[in-house]
Length: 263
Ligand SMILES: NC(=O)c1ccc[n+]([C@@H]2O[C@H](COP(=O)([O-])OP(=O)(O)OC[C@H]3O[C@@H](n4cnc5c(N)ncnc54)[C@H](OP(=O)(O)O)[C@@H]3O)[C@@H](O)[C@H]2O)c1
Image (cartoon, rainbow, N blue to C red; front, side):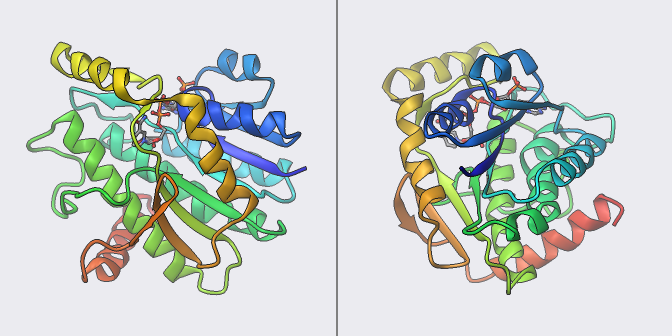
C-alpha cells in the first residue's frame, strides 16, 4: 500500500487520480478547500487554502508529522481568476496557489518522500507548451493581468521549479515528473468572465473525460522514470527545458521565491 498525497485532490484530475489509487488499495490524502468533496471520495482529507503561505506551511508540517513516508506527492491544485486578486499575504493569487504552494510542498516534504521505496513528485501543469518568460520585475502581475496569462506564467514557473528541485537535491532518490495532462474536462474551478466561461465550455466538449486522465498519471507512481527530472505530455516525453537559459532562470526564480517567502 502506497501513501499518495494529492493537492487539488477534491475535484477534477486530482480527484480522478484519488479514486483510481483508492481502488488499488492505496492510502490517499487529498488537500482542497472543500472537505465534503474529499469525504465523498473516501480519502483522508486535509482542508486548506493553499494560496496562503501559513496554510502551505501548516500542511507541510501536518503531513510530515502524520506520515512517515510519502510515496507520491501529486500537485494539481489550481483556481482560475479572470480578474487579478491578491491574497492576504500580498501575492497574486494564481502565483501563490499554483506555484508557491508547489514550491513549498515539493521542497518541504522531501524528507518524507526520501523515506519511501520509489518516491515521485508529479507536478501536473503544462510542460511542452510554449510559455511566456518569467516576469522578473513583476511576478505579481501589477501590470497587464489576464487570467490566461497568469495560468501560463505559473506553468512556466513550475517548469523552472522542477529544474530548481533537481539541481538543489542532486542526491535525492525522489523523481520529479512534470506532466501536462492534455485537454481534460475537469471542474475548471474558478471565477470566469462570460467570454472565458464560454471558451472553457467549448473546450470541455472535445476534451478527454476526467477519469481518462488518471491511468497515465498513475503509471508514473507505479514506475517512476529513471531520470531525476523528466517531463511528459500525457505519456509522451518532452524536454524539461524550453530554452538554453532555463537552468540559470530556475536558480534566479528559486532565489526570488525564497526571498519572497522570507527565507
Ligand atoms: N484540465 C485540463 O485540461 C488541464 C490541462 C493542462 C493542465 N492542467 C493542470 O492539471 C492540474 C489539475 O487541473 P484540473 O483541471 O483537474 O483542476 P480543477 O478541476 O479546476 O480542480 C482544481 C482543484 O484545486 C482545488 N483548489 C482550488 N483552489 C484551491 C485552494 N485555494 N487551496 C487548495 N485547493 C484548491 C479544488 O478543490 P476545492 O474546490 O476543494 O478547493 C480542486 O480540487 C492543474 O495544475 C492544471 O493546470 C489541466
